[in-house]
Image (cartoon, rainbow, N blue to C red; front, side, top):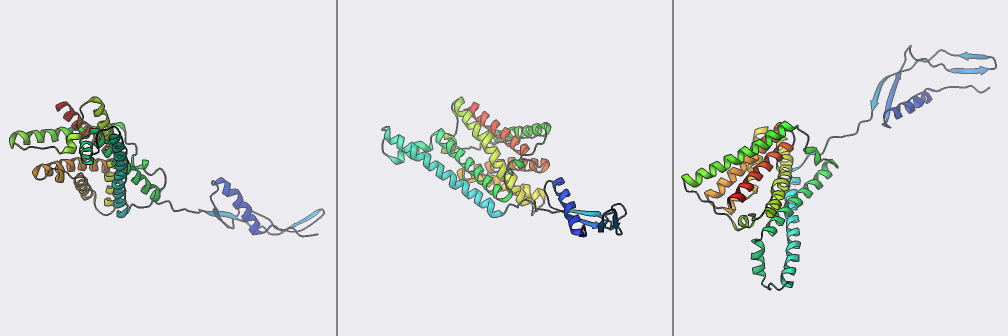
Length: 321
């Protein structure tokens, strides 16, 4: 009669087949070694009424190895930051061009004239055009960051920067933004009264001044919600993270605040002392947000501080108009 034999390879194959489903389908490598606890006999020959069993060959699993898959997220490179900013400006220009083209066609079609220079001057002084331009830039910046993060780290990585931090820290962060705004207003009031420092607003700043509750609501949606989220994501998220991979925490926060302040170009819009004072004020707010981001490891706190800071200044400017 044909001998029946259970081979070692068959035993290992069956045991591996039992382990794999228990680990969610992940491939498992099992090594066996002799032991007294598990005994498998090899049947060399079987005849009716009699069985001959050879010496048992014991086996026991002693090491289980799960195949590892690299899960380390991709790091942000400096050229990622550069292309994010470039794409934001390009996207803003494209959206503004489309909006201006549609508005220009309507302007000429309704018989307001065919003078392009007059239309451009009127559009630049229009509240809604300036706010739509700002919203276009922030939306383009948000889409550019989302694209880079999905490429580097996969889906859902954008929301990972806004980890929960608790209500108390969120309240303190919002309170710090409110306190900083009042400090800034106090310093500006002292400069105006003591040294007769004058701050002349640009045409864009005049156009962005709200004159009704509807305009204030639109400005608040952009300046208190959209701007803090996108700017914190770029400066205190991607840029600060990239700097902290190369520098200590405090130098990273200071450099981030300086770049954030220069980004707003107040020193170009207001040449002289006025522009650099405005730049220093923005840098102070950027430093506050960077310190909150480092302390909480989340962008919720800096976004809250940024939002209350902007909201206070906007409300004071609207009420004082």
